[in-house]
Amino acid sequence: MKRRLQLLVATALVLIGTSASALAQKKPPPAPLDLNAATLEQLTQLPGVGPVTAKAILDFRTKSGPFRRIEDLLAIRGITDRRLKELRPYITVQPAKKSALYAPHGVIPNFQVSVAVLDSTRTFSGGKSCASSSAS
Image (cartoon, rainbow, N blue to C red; front, top):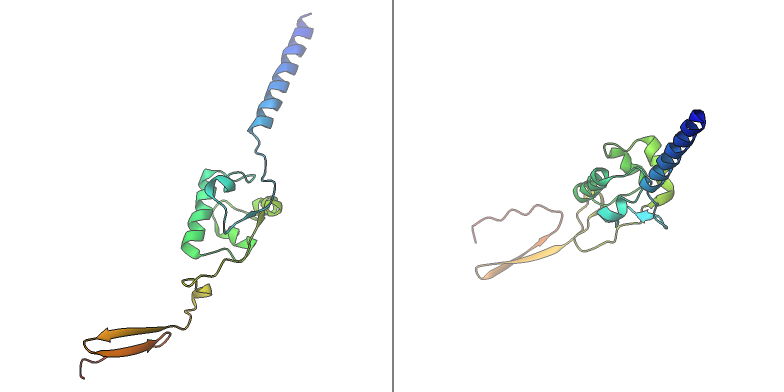
């Protein structure tokens, strides 16, 4: 009888532990997340990514610009080759939308700026250093 009670208690503890760990597991996103558009909340849905790692991903994106490839995640502390392999099915990298201010890889696009100085106008072309003298 005592043995049977011990077995019953042990079984109950195993079942409680199993259900608690099942509840603690995250449900991955239904579709792959774009690393260049995902929010903090979306990133925390990824397996193995908590709020600290999600914030590090966002900080990296803000500091370094858009992700060019999934492997760029390896630059983030805590993301190893193994974790990247686990994340691959749930992430993607879409090309960043280009805007007037977007300059890929540090390239400055050609531009022209007109500046009115007193009564004269000078035009400067982008990518060139234009030093003006005060002599007119």
